[in-house]
Length: 165
Image 1 (cartoon, rainbow, N blue to C red):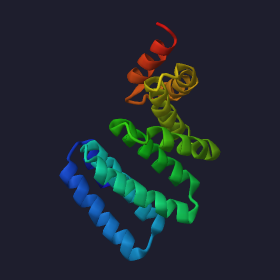
Image 2 (tube, rainbow, N blue to C red):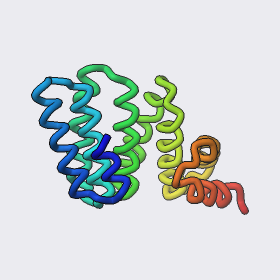
Image 3 (cartoon, one colour):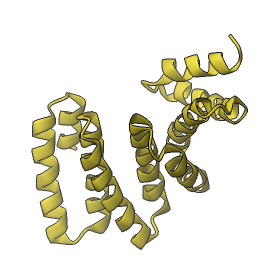
């Protein structure tokens, strides 16, 4: 938790130290769910630092652990993070998003569904498929409004463009 607080405060060096301490402890305890969750947090930290390759490595390690445990909720979170990371890199966003969205819907993680929907909407717009983007953008905006997500303005702008405003 302290690592997350440090990350939000943009004290990335402290966050990294705290996450590494937590990882060492969880590895010693062989607590796979805690290891996976912390790897996901470190992946998010590296994404914030724009260290995309490092972020991807952490996310993939977390995903592998989640798949071994068949933890669908954790898998949905990591797949959503991989989709967001891919948008920044414009690499595999569609693939990760299309893998993650059904899993997120299966477990009912509205926040993750919205994040992935927003990612996929952006990917479809970039790929010249606004017809596929519109329902995804609408879904993202609906959830983002309820939770006051920091990307709400961006999602609303995309939705406005798709609706022809």
